[in-house]
Image 1 (tube, rainbow, N blue to C red):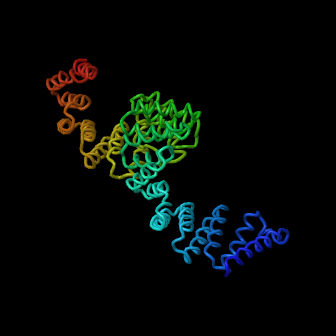
Image 2: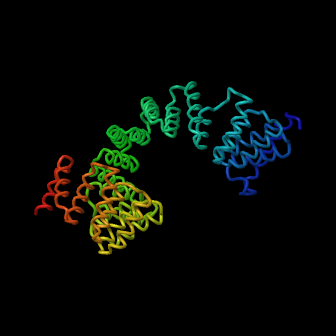
Length: 428
């Protein structure tokens, strides 16, 4: 069809559809919608690439991304190197969450019109496709052309985070924040600092974010994680409580509170927090910590339930078997306790599992086997005060007082409190 006549016809068709306002509600929702109908008619009847392109952009503006993609594909059948149609198709695929298809189209656009290459979008696509090295390279190209764009620096920072280049990520996040404090991602910067092993700096960043944004559950959670990493569990618990107050249905925050309370030596509060987490989402619960909190509050049967939940989740995890051993021992079921400790040793031989095995043997009166187990534990951690203390008890129970006294002297230089406790047991 002649281009001039097509233009005239376009105006006629748009006018015709606009005049049908009273005829059909289906085609007169908005002027934009009538325009898309007109352009669709033109595209189907004229076959002109420009018409399909116009239809594609109209559909895109209306949020009809599938229809937009189809229109751009129709335009490209007749004009396969049309840069505008390629760009429109690429962005349509992005809105449709089809990054691999978008990448193919944008690569073609780069070949056809290198000056139209959108390196920022290419960086984002590669991040979606879990290709952080390529993402970082594209963001650097974008920054070279637009160095004062904080969004590009944030994108580069996310890519460095994905690459575990946390120092570079911190520098990029700070660069974005210096350009525009409103564009600063305090949460991501804080976690990058945590991953660098800088919990104090991370806590300061999370606090700044809380001040700037007026709170926010994710920022309080990050603050709690920083304080926990800095060995300040009581302060961490306070931060997690604020996260819960802001998002009371988020199960992971209750689990965080449970872990912090456990570390703070408050097992009852920990058990309550873990129970809340389990009620909301069992998938996030640290059942090992839950089980130990229950054991510490004299609820061994419930603790056994918690440890078994973890075993169902991961049968190769040795820790719940250790916990089971102590819980069964508290219920005066030494044979079941020993079986659990033996399973823990089988799954993960180490100081903690052999310590548990020694305890299991002591429960059934096999003190020489307990001594052997504790010695195996010390081969992994020769200066463990806990294991030295337990080994001394096994010797004492086996009637070897002098060996227990020798261990008490050895313990004196490692843990004076435990040494004093042990001497009190040897000579009450």
